[in-house]
Length: 345
Ligand code: AMP
Ligand code: MG
Image (cartoon, rainbow, N blue to C red; front, side):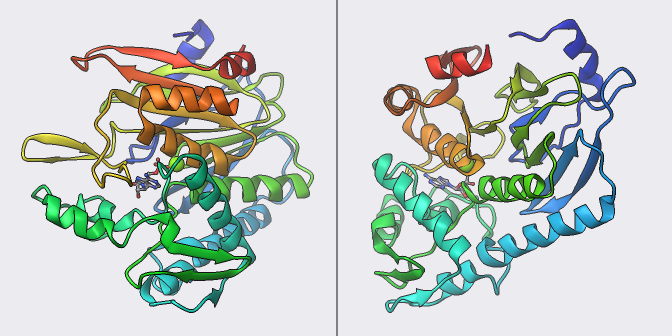
């Protein structure tokens, strides 16, 4: 825990959105002694977005319009909540013959499939029917634990290998297969907004979508600071760090869960077993150049559990911070990679 006096004084002004997916919060709303910043915010992807700029903004309304146009474009392609989005159309179709998809959608799918291979299927964008069966999807909360027979039946039409992507041509090998980019699309959107800001000449900014963040430059004379949340229902700050020209994402099992038959189940599903993960890894945080990769990797690590996740992170040279619950779920210990220490000290 490295919360210092100045940061403590800022705790009262930190903004915090009590939504299920908020795992990281930015510390330090603008106080008189700090650099002046300008923010643009709104909603997207079932959560909030906030772009904070420490550069002079001449036309805030025009910038907001550009940001929202970019976000709308991503949603029209990748949101399963919009019936006419590319992804929803693909999900509804039998699509045994390949159909043409946009370059953006193909790019995110290609990255997701590559990560599925790399993580031996821990990350899997076809997992949605299982997410629904466990009561985390748009179908709403379930009141009973799905039966083994039900899970096994669903497993016959999930699995990233049942998806076929050739360039911008997408097909499915079984008609029931669906794609859900919840674990990666926010990161992609952050990268897109970041690119937009850079193209418009902004050099000092922080983009936050639903608690996943990417920063460039500084906040006046200071670094951008972010906090990794304490992995408990009631939240709180676990660890504060400077975010220097990097993206950061956290996946956790503590905010989004259901209780079925007196047992608590996480919204992160192991795609191989079809069951929510049950290990002691409470949250996984990844620092990465790409917000899309940080987002997807954080989810994948949470599926793996502490030991596999740490070995994988070391092998891949990733910058990772894992918060692990002790056996009685009272206390936490931290396991981080050398790369995380190198980048944050
Ligand atoms: P995140 O908050 O980025 O970790 O994404 C979590 C969301 O991704 C869940 O709410 C599910 O919709 C979906 N999901 C659950 N398990 C997996 C998995 N193993 N691979 C990919 N997406 C998953
Ligand atoms: Mg994710």
